[in-house]
Picture 1 (cartoon, rainbow, N blue to C red):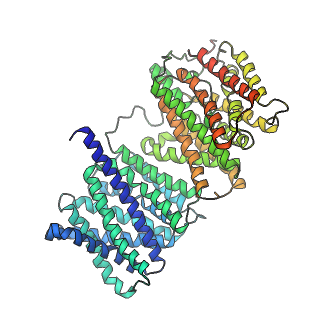
Picture 2: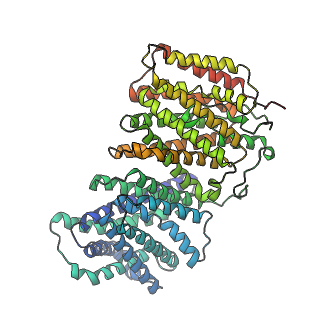
Length: 637
């Protein structure tokens, strides 16, 4: 089979799996609806009875007795019993709690399966399994936290479902290659039906109307249909490719829970669901290929003088991106090594892919700012900033904790890390507050003086030599600010001080990042800063707490963290491809993107003097970045 045909076959497999998990969510919705009016044993019996009837009708003419043939009847019976118990626990759970939260808790099953397979099948657990389990359990605690919507004994049902389902999958693995796959699928449902039949006479009720009767029948049909879709999907593509798409069931359950039952998780529960789903996806993706050997010992980062020039710049760039908090342009990051450590020269040419990633990051940050501005019109900027960093941290933990383990949290300079995180959080509070009062483009343009402030701060704090023209650039940038907030204009007032304060805090954030470069792991620095900012904002958020006004608001709160994390990761990838000095001028694309988004989303466009001021700030920054393409060296003693 050629590559094109193979890709098409795998694409069909992905579509089949997505359809299967969506069908499972529809089945769960039917079960939740019926369990509100009928006894649970009757609902479970109907689910498997009609499943068996449909499989007999479809497969018996073709397979005959092979449909019930087995070489391991004991394992098949045990598998059916565990399958029936998992369904009993899950239907019990969704009868008492929202569908999305219950479905999310059961998604810890794949990691439990990995642990059980290590114990009973002697399979080797992939690296990061214990961290993945810890993160997933943290996600469960976020969903069922004290005071949350689902805190209480009903949350034990989906947890029991996860354990039963992991056992069910473990027995399925032991039967793989022993019995026919369709026989195993049929026998499991047959055993579950037989168990339910022993109990259902004590709970028997006839459907009260034709709609309910149709739903009872539809449950079995959807169950059989979903399993067949899953089988066909795994026939067309490898399990390692399809595994991440199974977590789309959380999205389907979230959507159906909202549309059918009016249940939508709060922000903290959404964070827990994201932790579980992203951790599972990360572990599934890691399992697709061989692990690369680690190049560092735990908690010990490579020192600047031991790195190759390109590697040193990548480490500096990861720790100190060219964009300051939430997208404000910052000084190029070549000089992020400690004082008196010369920084090797690197290529000044930026490959197209690196440029596209850097510009894409600017667009992502401008989109984040637009969402924050929209939310700040109905919620406190403190609340918006809190959600932005909480979900940023959630995504980083879910994606990187299974890979890095404790190295994601290790630092040699906790004082500097805390100070950096405080500057990060304060800069976001100031900026989100500013865009609640000011047009997006003008606020972004004012913050764009941060790179020149960083240069001046580096001279005073890090004793770096001033690049030629720095003071003239500072004067020109300040003149640009005055053109934007000139006396008598609509922007002149106290609100214009907020983006200026943002630039000052961004300067502190960048200078501290420079001091930490080559000391701590770059991704650890990125994570710890977000975590400290989230903790800072958590101290003040309760006083400004407001629930989302609807599912769209909740999704936008989550999106602020997701877009922020994706934007920073795009920058990391850009700096792995190109030098920071070659990418620095493109960081000012953020101001252009803010101008476009401000006009498209909010109908705001600067007047001519403000437009000139914006152009003056951006042009000054680009000229300085281009003139300063060679590394800055510290003043010798």
